[in-house]
Length: 247
Image 1: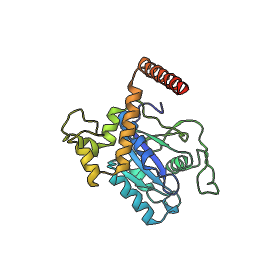
Image 2: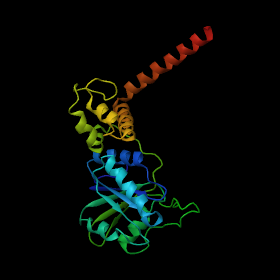
Image 3: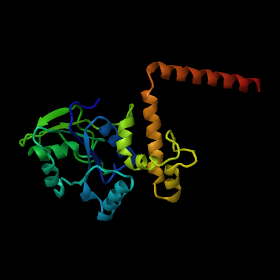
Image 4: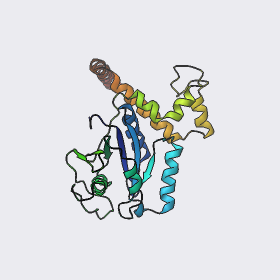
């Protein structure tokens, strides 16, 4: 649980060291499964060449990311005005992302003063972990923002609905599969696999979809089902060890 009653979630990644498409897709799945609208904020654009930023934006489009993307730099102030324009009075905006990507610095810019503690970047160019607690702040214009500590892990907990929204390109392809319950892994007549083979569908994007779908399905199992699965696996390991000892 990150926050409740959130209208929008701004997933923040730094262009210079933190850009990770697979992690971003993971965030987007959970945001949409939670009923909020996502934005992707690419920070520290002043630290990369324009072609690097362009390739990252192209990667987002190639992965079927439909959420609005906001390139932003608190140094050059690029994108700050656009960010302020999307803030609607009475709506709640939650900032999430890794440590050091600039979430607190952005919120300080929105507030207009240094309310949240920040630290200088490290010698590697990465920001330093500063925020240790969540905080709800009411901006002068009436929008509410939530700052969050940097996240080290972000699991997919029973998010079938969010996966459908986060991988809409694959879901659309799947509607034309021969079998309604196609797993998109080996079945004949699978349009997802056909798109993968032709190059229409990016392989890394597809592999992340399969991985997150499996992770979501696992967490959807009840506690008893998971325990049963673990016990059966434990018995299998013991049996395999005994067979090895006999041999």
